[in-house]
Length: 213
Image 1 (cartoon, one colour):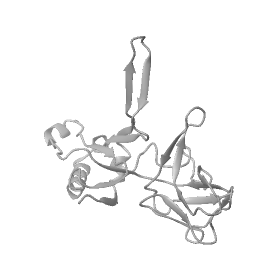
Image 2 (spheres, rainbow, N blue to C red):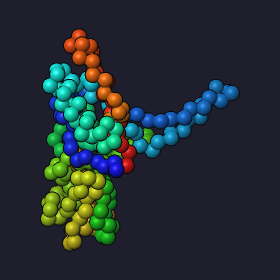
Image 3 (cartoon, rainbow, N blue to C red):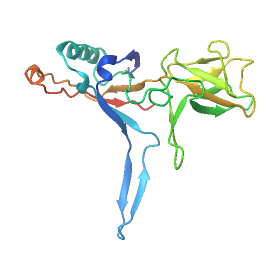
């Protein structure tokens, strides 16, 4: 049975790795030379290569052990994206006003954490489902709510739930700030470890791919 292991890939290795978002677009070139383009995926899917972060044998051994415990591609886990792991702008501190996650109606008590990219032509709203526990800050109408008293946040799903008596009023802006991880799995069932090549400076290939819920 496949499960999600709520464990973070070794952070010092992840922060030195390479990768980013991928999209799937079909392009048909017409006889006139014009194009028809269609997005096959509603959300981007991120890919990484952890090999770039491995600089010594200790780190390599740590990743092999992590790979074995995940049973290769079988079990997913948390990955910290060095470029994109915060609701705030790069270098800025998280605040409860960072991202709009909904508008109250006096009845709805649950809101999905999300991060919006862009804003002028076609902003993209990305659901955030693996917030870092303890990092989530929430505000209603600009006033910060208290975690555990006014709301809770499920670190496994990114769903914010307001407790009885604290449900956002009709028209109230619900905002949030948070740190987050990406759910990923290994994209191979075979790790080829060539120590002679590694000693000569070759980078091992350790592909990871985001798990889309």
